[in-house]
Amino acid sequence: MQSTFAQELQETVDLARWAPSSHNSQPWTLIHIQERERASALLGEALQEGEQCVVLALNSARKLKALESLEIEMLMSCGLFLGLFCMTLGVRGHDWRLRWFCEAEKSAPIAALEQEQGCLALTAVRITPNSVKPVADAEAWRRLALHRRTHRGPFNPLRISDETLQQLLARRWPLSLTGEHLLMRIERDQPAIRRAAQLVKQYAVLDFANYKAWRETYRYIHFSLEEEAEDGFYLQSLLGPQSKWSSLFYRCVLAPPVMQALRPFGAPQRMADQLGALVEDSSQLLFCHLGEEHMTPKALTQAGARLMEVWLNAQEQKLAIHPVSVMLQHDQARIAIERLRDENGRMIFFARLGAIKEVFDKSPRRKTNGIIAAG
Image (cartoon, rainbow, N blue to C red; front, side, top):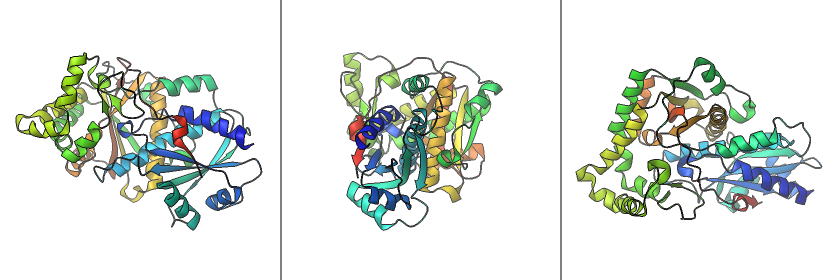
């Protein structure tokens, strides 16, 4: 049974690894608990014959650390992966249930696992293989997940209809996975979008000019399509096709020491202006808030899973989502964009939303066997 499930787990993760994440850092680890006694201790109840247990964890070695606020994005990134993983299990005919670790004090078995793996354990997934009718067509689901990309370039001008908006925000996934605390709003009012764009031009420079934050970001930018990578993103996904010499130019000019040297000449501000122009050209924006009382690892991970559901809904409608995370990583910028929406709670996701214009297909991904760990 273990060898059969190991293959099933590999194939499920092979699809789930295409979930988006901040900087495409993919900060998750999935720990397959192979000892039944240990699995039962982590689940808080006996693992039944034929059942399996895996633990989703935030990998401390892979997470972004330059700014304290990035912890929110790391937890949401893990939730994006969890959402795609669990729903893929269902598509493959496997039942699953979650036991969240984040709310109560960590038990000794959980603490031992975290120390052993160098991670923050978020939830255990109890899996009963081949026990339910598949919840969707497997091939259609695979195509949907594999075709989803983070589109960072211009969008086609298309105002989303009310009907499409309903389909985009439709809830079909279990609340145990997605939670019910994330508030999602889509802005279609052009004056409001222009005001948001002006805030991006004003405040995004805080991130681009921050040496520590930009040094971490720069490590995730790949300047040649021939460069093999398992995380990060290619310059071409931002700026379109580049010649060898233009790629070399950007590699040099965007290097953190050079960026610092160019600060007096306005280089970070020009980058902020370009990002603001993309926001201004958007037909709609997506804002996501979470109440301050729900800013917990569990709720943030669930928010990521809910965002994964919406992202796949968008892909079905041939719509693209481009996070504008720089506005949420510094308190001054985040508070300014929060005031624009005047919602209760903290904004944890802000993105451009529009029709896919050009597809940049190449996106680095970790190998499946690098994601699954034995525990």
